Length: 468
Image (cartoon, rainbow, N blue to C red; front, side, top):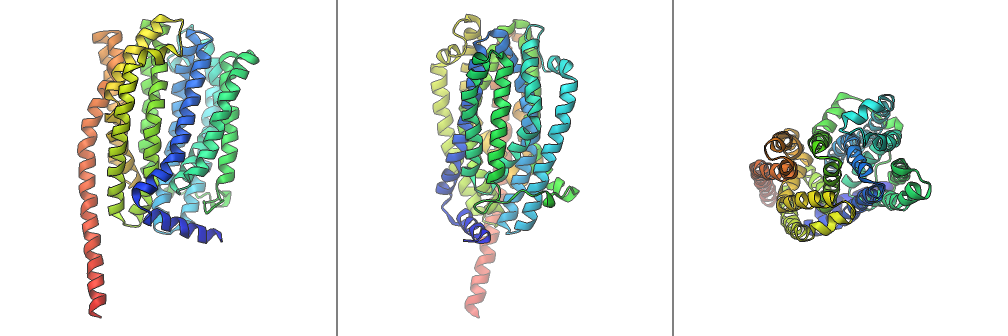
């Protein structure tokens, strides 16, 4: 079967397979990738936490830098992927190849420039990210390696999203999953076996991420996927405009995630290293809990993009409601389990530090109460972003980590002390939910109207053919 024939078969699959089965089949490898990545993140936190509380806090400081890398990668990857899925739905494969190459090579270049700046300004960067004097040495050791890997780490996220939006979630999983498993294996070797401490954890990360990058790059261009070629690199505004329209919501979300982590570290700092370490652990645990729903939603996005491009609005609506119902039930179950076993979860990371356990347990329980609301927020954002409603998607994207969280983390700790730090994220989630509800309802009504118009046009063509 030729490359074009495989691509045609993929189009047929994406626009004709029942949506609940299609979303599930695409979501499974993505969920596996997300879970492996989250397990790696928690394993990384676990191993570093064995060094000490300040070292554990250093991982929380590094989260902010990782969020910046993810902001670049997801902006260019999600923007390219969203646009590519709609182009493939319109069967415009040649232009989709230009979009893929432009997103990929832009990420490499931008990552290299920022990495160089970060290495030159390492000392002020660490303190700007929220490090205390006791945490700073551990944070420097960790962050210097992460900066070295920044270009291909950002480019890997672009490749991952491009593959996923083409309906090739399995090939994306191979790259991300292999790197995640390798990272878990290398962490204890470098941290304890080679006595490299926090620097060893970061070195394990960039080695594993490079392996992921190589696998993802090799997987592009096989089995009907778009091959990344430099000759297709087309740095024109008309392409960047569409990439930014689809990618800026992710950029805002990730950047605000970095800023929110910095503010969280600064707000927790007056309560000691134990507060910073405990909130870092809660953040990792929450990311693990929500990764399955993110993976499920990422299974929805290529289905949404392909069918929106093909004007199959009925399938977009069906896929959205299937995801909402499933993800809400799952998040409610996870929230209940997390609330009951929160103390055991936190103590897994720092058994010796009772302050970390006490602070983290309380914060995690507050977060678990708001877990089910995340399902609606996430799916609404993914719907808006995939169909090209960049402004609305950006508003939803910035709500959780920016519009509501930043005021909460700046105001609540001053009013309620440490409790204010612990409840800031759940409070933000509640307000984000109430913002996302009308956004989604308006868009769903619009899609329903477009569906009815498409059905009327189809009926007219059928009636006209019958008269002939």
